[in-house]
Length: 361
Image (cartoon, rainbow, N blue to C red):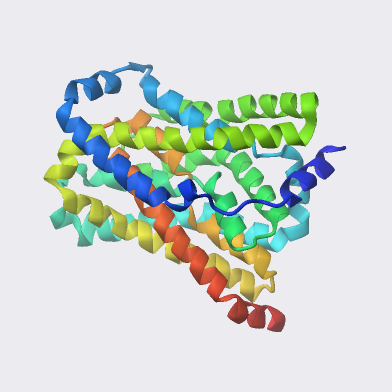
């Protein structure tokens, strides 16, 4: 079986719906936030030790957790899927445009409007620039993992979803650092380029290489069923690492959260607006160009969601555990799941409206 047919076999197989763990992910996130805040107050020394365990500005405990999050996701990516890009070129073009030409810049604009101006009086003055940086980091990396869940929930075209994720990962390797650096520079923040590129190397390029070597080995040994079993076994590990990262982050941020809970709500404002703005724009453009609904749904969801694992990791590496940037990216984790589920609901409910417009186009 060649790579293309193997990819088709893998993604055409029936996929289970959202499991109980994934369905209530927002609840687990909330519980981990509460646990982190409480533990941070009870045993602050433990979190201080973990926070100081760094080599070349990279926190080792977080690096391990992020790898546990990312590598199982990267195992799903089949390089052969890039051959499918041409089949859905309009949806691909719209999604790439929204992801890379609109989303980071719209978030920078929203952060400037809300964080730097409208909400500034209610935020710590010395953290405003750091909050803006965190929001930009959050928007500059398209989602890699949860996109498969969102696409499944809207009956998305699997070849399109896989191709778009693979293409976004390829673009991310070369575009993430320059876009972030440009926007952070415009926000009057000094960018440590060596650290930023190092984080991209550690959290994208190396996991991709490791995952692809592992993927090829599993396929060579026992074929697609063995790879599917590996992915199924690793799924809880990935989510568990995410939740442990939240406990660690909020353990270090606990004092600030207790002291300023309003900051969490205010940081969520531009994130929520950005999700609906970009999802709506991608969905409308697909409809205007006559793209099939099964492609438009995942296109809108991919265009709006964020690779928050990378954003959190980069914020920690560049700005530190206790920075406003790290807090802003973690707020993105909390906000994304319930908001994206609401986008899924809107896409499904609007199918009739969409297909009328698609037929006219």
